[in-house]
Image (cartoon, rainbow, N blue to C red; front, side, top):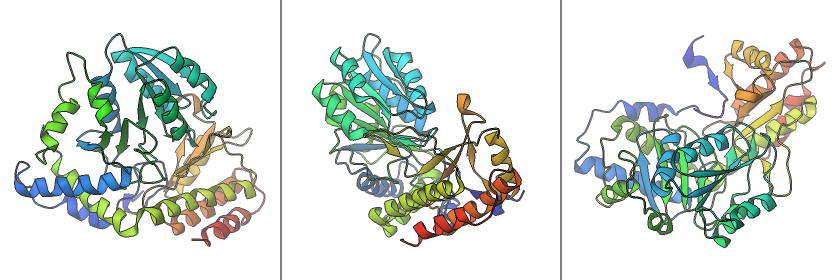
Length: 380
């Protein structure tokens, strides 16, 4: 399969614009010189707009998991309790990272099930230094109640550490307004830059909570703040990735956040409409505080069908979608609508998916899914 002809319709990494790829091929510069500092400041200013924050914002040369670990490694000591909300693979990851540093109070729901805010409040009322949650759980295609968790965290004086890796830049995420003390993003998701960088916002309350004796070395957020005040990073940055990030952020700004969010949300709505028309059931179990993800849609594999067969059928057509992770392997399939995914990409994916599903004996006719998706995308 020619990679240049492959369409990525998975929940990250996402298609990267040619001008971003070209930017990454620029000659190296002195990462301690004025040119890098100017690029660093430009990226930071654009990222603050995307995060909707006035807080400190740092870019780490490392994936989203690096920033998740920085957040917990700098704020949580061995005797500190962390309420770790889990309803998917990445909530589980947050829980596992927290266990390396403090005392985890696990709040585990079935993957794809909605968070019970009453249970969260019960755990926080017992005392905790922090609560962690994935806002947009891509492993299950569910959007969790960040605003409500922020209110509970404030009520019980706990830090709210949020994984916004696949929501910030793709959904209306109000980091400051919701009281998120530390929010994390990955470069290869809604921002549509190459993988390898992660960005996080840190407020003053979170810095005041960094009282442990031994902070991490490479992931020391105090070191990042000290360097950022000088328009620098504390350690050697991945310069080509910063070139790519800057160009990707310019594309975001040119489109405008409102339009970009609407495009991604409309794409997800079109996918859901197509699934409904084809009789495919969505995977998340929603309540009044949760919703379907605006950046990735997760569907149940029809009875008697392994979702990996659907994934393989799409791959044979040059379209990469995702299956289920870990315990959900073979049970669900997922289609991304994040980043630079365009309406034509959604339409092609649904058209080819109908052919795959017909071949597998899941649908009897071609067209209803495509027509349903088109009717939604026509609203853009």
